[in-house]
Image 1 (cartoon, one colour):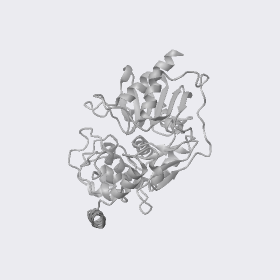
Image 2 (cartoon, one colour):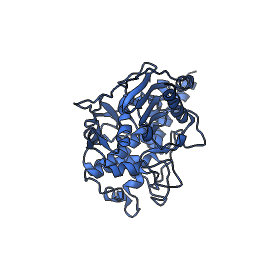
Image 3 (tube, helix red, strand yellow):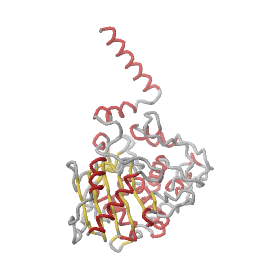
Length: 378
């Protein structure tokens, strides 16, 4: 037994030495945060295991009004079933800018902070629009090399980053602990990771979903505004839009304090929904133009005919013959906006449905269909 223990300890020490020598020591943080907490992947409450920057609540909160028919309808059997199966923790239906239906499960509530995952990409893209409006960035066509000379001659623009057309050599893998995606999530120097990337395909020619695009975009916005992204988000949207609750944005570590722009804003369903309303109303909020309407219009249209599922920072769908734009996260986080029906659907939860041959997993279509079933049944 002593020999076995000595052998085992020796192997572990060797692996630790190799990990640190090859700069893969971030894997240990991944093990500590994920597996040692009983999970198998990133999870909606993981922000407590990371450093965070604060996004401050508004000093003049603007609560969502409750619809005259608030919660008079009940969820359909199919909606209840999928909410149970996939661990939904919040489901909201906002009709005509009033909360028509909301449900919280598993001990979560209106102020619970859970991980946005890639819904943060849409928010980072909104910050791009704000930075353009504020004069910090010239336009969607401004070269990234104006901010990071490493990319001189690449032809890559800030718009290419927002529309997922950068040509960067990022591998979007959520299963390999050795992937750049895992490194960006758990390592302590995001900027170093991002600036090690190279442009290997012609930018601006085709859609390819890469989280590294949004991270680099966040770095560009931060450099252009000379403000931490969480601070700029607070001033640009959280305060003027009357966000009721503060939020958190995960950072890489205490030394660099670079937010994970591609993910990881911890907030609640009611507050996430505000971005659906902002874009639905062409960038106006309470009579003030917070985002240029032309930027909003561009964002909710597909940039590439061959890739109708994505605009600038937002997913797109024509489900039920309607024009939908969507913020979405890896575990089935959704803010689904359907402007023609003045409708916003928010779903947060632990898991998403099975992948389909369409651009969204099956659960997305169920949430939309069952919402209409509830509305039509009243």
